[in-house]
Length: 500
Image (cartoon, rainbow, N blue to C red):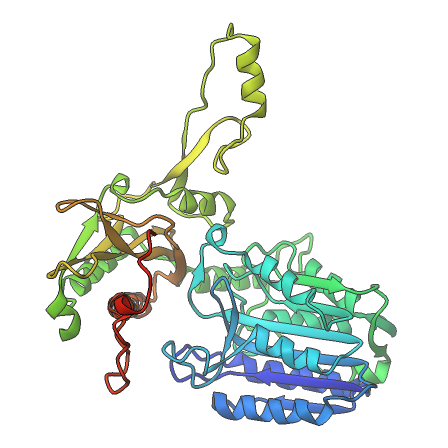
């Protein structure tokens, strides 16, 4: 028995709509049904609320739990996606950040459903356009590491996982189809009649995106590379026709025609709309500054703290920025920023043999490079009004901690990428406080033209900072979140004194 579960989300209450996703799921359903391979389908594409989606999937899975003859389960999803370092989320139509777990499908949840069927082969194809925040990779496990761990968990005898992009990239689409889904279909459309393996499809997609640095599909295979998707016949190929991309580059020929030049000019003009002038960027920074300066905390926080925004012009006033320098080393995008290194240590050429031996066996820092330089952070190569924003919460009472939320950014001609953290301070003495160590940096990117999205980003993280800080105070004072709940007893009478 072979089963297929397809989910497509194209409209959202609180995220950008992805209209091509409706066509994505319809095309994939058409392809899977044309194989005559799958015995039952569950297709969810009506933009239902999360509770209904989860209930429908649960009931469908329960129908087949305990069956011993399930050979393959094929799962397909198209829509937004978010990775936070510990979990990959698929937001559903009624997604809200406040109820992220309730209004999303998680990768772990999907894997548990698939494992519960004990299939001989599990196939997961995800065309997910990221919708927001990621953790900076070297402070959390990376997306590919997370997915690899997901694949080798008990319950998957064989599996093929295909993801449309790494999570520091966008999975792109036009008004008709998502590019990754189109590539999956092209792998079948352009194949000669005969059997096609899942690995053949993955190879086609990898080649299709090989020269596109903006989107790099990711594959995990746990099988023999002999697992077949279907038998392609001429009649099967005729069952579906792919819509052409909205903008197509002309095929290269030895002679450039006037039509080709016109098409190329149209493409350049369309692409130009994504770019910002230096003057436009300065205007954006001015608007952002006004938004931050006009920020008013809620009364709960205002009663407890003096909130002070600071516009950072010198990055040396921040905690170590190696994590951002390393991100810049690894990114394929072009930003007006570059890593900063210390010069390599120069040793006296006559130093003794013992010194040489110690140097050869010493443990090198993770930020020390092969040429002896040590990564120290990054610097902006663009002339900007400010390089970051710090919102400092100074307590009005001795019993609560100081805190801060800090954002720094790098920009290109088309994009701004934020790196940010929130942290408490520890008291060094009566006069001095310092941030706690082990900052957890997060990152999020926006198009420079998306001024509304950028301003909403700051509103969002300031709101999250308030909620987080209030929760920290409640935890410190051991206060129940709901005032109607009974308060905890005085633990000083019940527990031993700790020296920690």
